[in-house]
Image 1 (cartoon, rainbow, N blue to C red):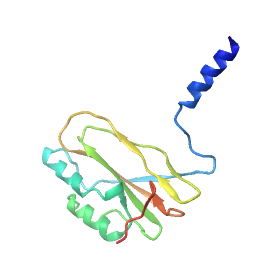
Image 2 (image 1 turned 45 degrees about the vertical axis):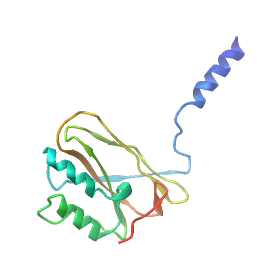
Image 3 (image 1 turned 90 degrees about the vertical axis):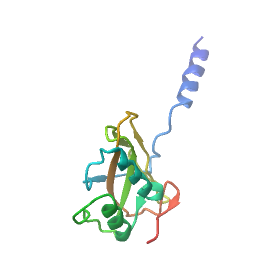
Length: 147
């Protein structure tokens, strides 16, 4: 009986999601303000402007996205020599975006994962995150965009 129980416990433990490797580094992120509120149904067209893979690595792409999304003033300051902007966006302004811990492994790959609630509403939900690019060579296994 004890042996069976041990196998059951090990079987359940094997199905648990993996956690960060001990040498992965958690990267801190600063949430940046948005250029406006996206509460109208027609705002969903802005999702087409989200950068591929959710990464902005240069000032031109950042300024263009900010302006396209309705930013009248200057975009928040980002030193792209030292920082990156990560973008998470999805349908429905009433939804909440949750970003997982950003983990940088020893090969320089930054894991950027996020989820969004599924409440129907017009518009879009958006998060802009500024992170250090120190040691970052790729994000989710993909090279940083060039400008």
